[in-house]
Image 1 (cartoon, rainbow, N blue to C red):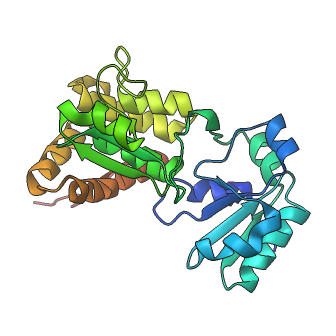
Image 2 (cartoon, rainbow, N blue to C red):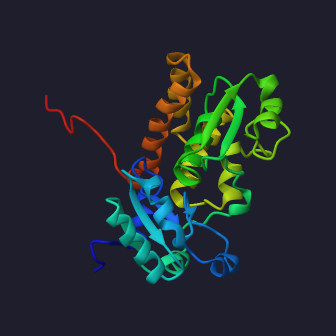
Image 3 (spheres, rainbow, N blue to C red):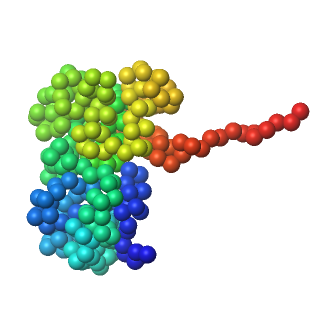
Length: 271
């Protein structure tokens, strides 16, 4: 049994992708990163030698620290965080245990450059419906919890991307967009290496709703209806995005945990 200051890979795997997921700090040394540069979903890299300088950035958050094998580096950094009043735990077995469990690992070379505050910046067309809410949900939950999304006039997406250093998505002619029958959400799953059974199930629903192929999944029509309803409820795109994140949180938890559950009330009727 792990200690109260240790989290297993199975425990962390269950918490990634949900709204209250802990911050994940990767303190592997450069040689270990060079040997396998992939990162855990949502992880940020920090130098264990300067923990005194950056520990305060995680105040008020639960934190999981990982090094290559879950030994001295993550143990020491987690202890320092606790000294600072931050809920720090180490990942049991470290990066090697996570990789051995074949849990998702992201290809970091495709993560956009971060701004001076450590955030990735994305831009797309205003008035989102399906893909332009689903993709921000995926990025926030699995790639960069601090990501910033700009919604602008369709004609200005490219110019805003150029002037503000943002990454465009879900418009024609860019890397992060539809490819054949695949919608942008599918492309992000493939390129980031985030294919899991739950996300695969969710991707069918999103693709069906986004491309009017309702036969892909029976839930697609419901997602489309909810998405269009949200677009009518909110004039502000960011307010709509915030509401939409909760919608996708619910669909994800269903896809991960509840697909076999049914509901029927009343169970029976008598004459």
